[in-house]
Structure formats: structure tokens, C-alpha cells
Image 1 (tube, helix red, strand yellow):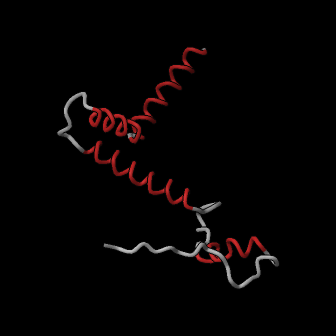
Image 2 (image 1 turned 45 degrees about the vertical axis):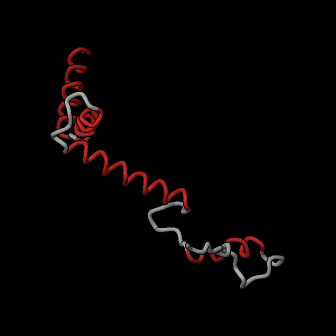
Image 3 (image 1 turned 90 degrees about the vertical axis):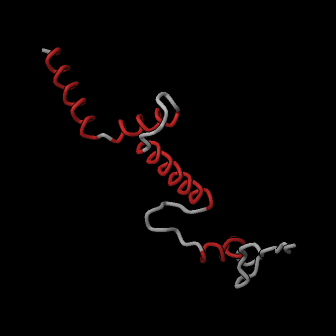
Length: 107
């Protein structure tokens, strides 16, 4: 059996609520959670989005490298699609071919 604990909200006890309510309400949280330099804002949804992006990246990389996925399976389709999106050399070749074709037809 475990006991539930209740944590205090991140209020600041260094300022009176009537003097500066914003500082009172979120001052401790802001002090303990500075905005990282690479982000314009910070909060629980930003960390959630970062964790989700990492999980998706791991899933896509695993699907791409799994050569034993059944043909036509979702994993095989996802892996092939991700690999084609990451093949920048082939994308550059296709873009160059498209530009050449478009320029030739414009003449």
C-alpha cells in the first residue's frame, strides 16, 4: 500500500498575493523552469511535444531499418515512405530533372 502525496502548487511565498498576484501564482514555477534558449516559450505541452517527436523518430527509424517487415504491412509502408523522405540525394535528382523538363517545355 502506498500513500498519496499532494504537492503544493508552484506558488511563491516570497511575495504577498495582493502585492503581485502573477508573481505569487507562478513565480516559483518560472524560477524552477527557465525557458531554454532554443525555445520561444516553455511549458508542459512543449515537453509533451518534444517527447512525442522523439517517440515518432524512434518508431520511424525502426520501421526504416526493419528489413524483415512483411511486404505490404503498415511497418513496411511506413519504413519505405520515411526512407524516401530522408533520401535527399534522390530528392535533389528528381528536382533537377523536373526543373530541366519544365525549362525545356517552356522554350
